[in-house]
Length: 475
Image (cartoon, rainbow, N blue to C red; front, side, top):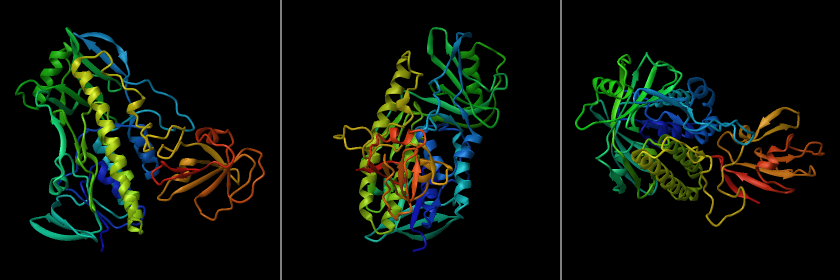
């Protein structure tokens, strides 16, 4: 079996899964029926938890270079300047949370960075390749691919359907996509230039009688374009002329000329959740499993974290432990339902014109998402995100916990106030000691006490960190 995992869909979700599997030396193929790579901004907000995933996958530096912080928004009502504000006030990084704020980067550029990383493992996206059909049995999945008018039969151990809201995989499995589509609301999204506007700012142009009715422009890093969002009137066509009409109408100006419409789409509130995320050896992830309103910037991020949760489980299954596969649906479907609720609430506020409709709190950053048992009440229990912290190794060199977690392995941390080490032979087991403690063997020094504090540790506390950076167990 030359292909162990076949991935249908080469958006952020599919690419994340491919990278995470490839770095585990698992043979992967990733296909997409599109003949060209996506060229629009769409999901342009990268949440802090996703930045931590990108750190682990080795793309955080490229994402930081290409992106920018969330911009200040300049609001104009009836053509008059009404002030500046941010959707969320930036907060400083801490030893436990190194990436605390939203980062903006057009989705097509995020995908390009992920493709480049995947290429480092010798794997490239196969464009113009559609998943025509598939069958599964006890040992694998047999898929028929169509490309250039011909077909190819592929045998894989597992199939991931990361092929979007209209997922061929989900439909073939007959899994209900529960939810609704509100046809009464239509929004026009597009990427345009507006050279009369300062590209270091975002803009909100609103009607005089209703400050919540208007058009938004968010600057896209790496060029002069803005992502523009506006309500689409009646049967209006998604064209540059329509967008220009909206700018003229809501801004009260005549000097803002839009050019270079490189991507445009009509969006309707389509809020849905797949009834199941798994059928035997076939899994759903990203938009194939859940579709979100753009409010709150949750969809792309939730899909990436689906893939991050699933890929280490598939690796373990291929290594002989299929029991870990059962946790994917129970964990990620619960999270997706919660995030859908949050996105929907924010959309309702926007539609209702609530004063705080443009505010984004810490609940949107996805750092508090947990897989813990609801019965657990204590701080930092199994299922919680494992915090970062700075330490020094036995040679006195600085190291981060995230550096230790990076990669496909599990990590064990044992905390010792006295300096007693465990003597474990596991290459990814460490004893964390206080400064000045006498220690032998493999140990790390918690110079400033951040690790002990972050893990609520006392003498003998032991935590087992999963490959996806969540606590697997606390002793």
